[in-house]
Length: 214
Image (cartoon, rainbow, N blue to C red; front, side, top):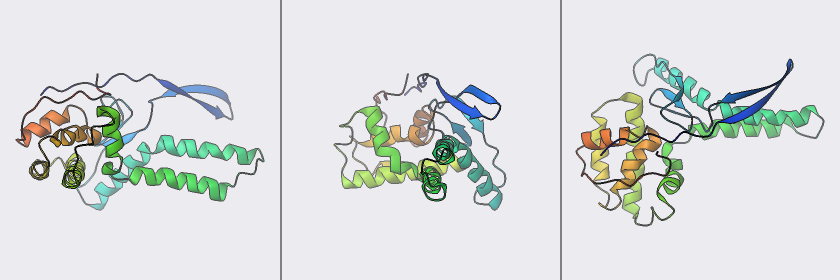
């Protein structure tokens, strides 16, 4: 298998109103995600921020660093929610204590969702609407477990965790194992798919190209 790069997204601009006047600033298009000690935009080969994780995995210092990264990744959603304050300032009946609070909490909650909660839509958008048709109940449970395992590996980089990934993938039908291969990129980066798959000693095949690969 060969690693592929990701297509260059079209840059978007956000107009920011400030007390000193109006300015237009271009930022990395969202959504932003946190994985592999980095915060990424839609192009995973160009990180928005590198995160310094202090302490060993599971220690308070490590968890604090990871929480900082998740907060950075939520910045665009939080910014969009906070912009909803403007109607309140203009006297349009917006309730910042309720409506804004709920919007901000929803943005924060979305960052805490496990990767498996967004996996199926991600796979459909990359491989087509019918790509999930062959999944059985066992396949789905194994695929979900595989994503959790890769998420843990992305945090720890402990190679022994990949053995667990191989075990759960082999619980899937051979016709659906490719979904687990591509799911690696949902948590990490496109090139990580081949590296992890080969390290796990899983069956070789020619993978389909994802829609967001270049």
